[in-house]
Length: 182
Image (cartoon, rainbow, N blue to C red; front, side, top):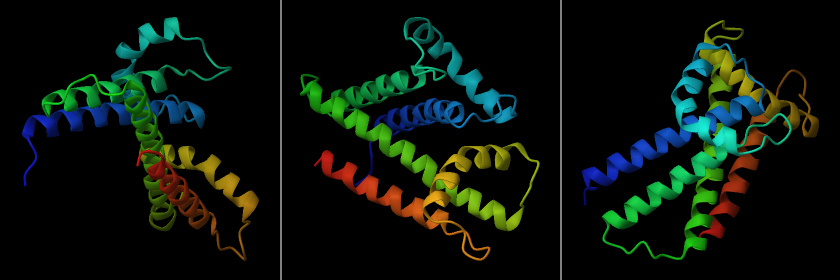
């Protein structure tokens, strides 16, 4: 019926830190404003863990891949902790665990984009051109997606249907990801 509190705590803390790491990666991917207070907070929370990995891992062009690597390690560690808590042996097929972790990270990235697009649409209705750091950051994250979708489906008479195309693409990719782990 109910979930074990320890399991809930481990899962919540793991997913929260993975969210911060993925946000850091997506912010640099979108070239979002580094001096935004929210960006600064994300960097401050993730930098102590990322610093050793940034020294070891090479950059891929201008991209720092250490947030993705650390997010994958945190996901694997969370899975391992949950398996051990449930009484299972950690000698689970490591390839299968790795695939679950990669698919889980991809699904998390898609969920971040899904909610960011919803937030961007709502902000465009309620407070377009807001100077608050959160709407600016959401706009910076979703802008590359909107530009890509508008190349496929340009605005029709002032009506932008690109969010619908983005939602369809996200749902299609998530359904295919779900098939990988079944």
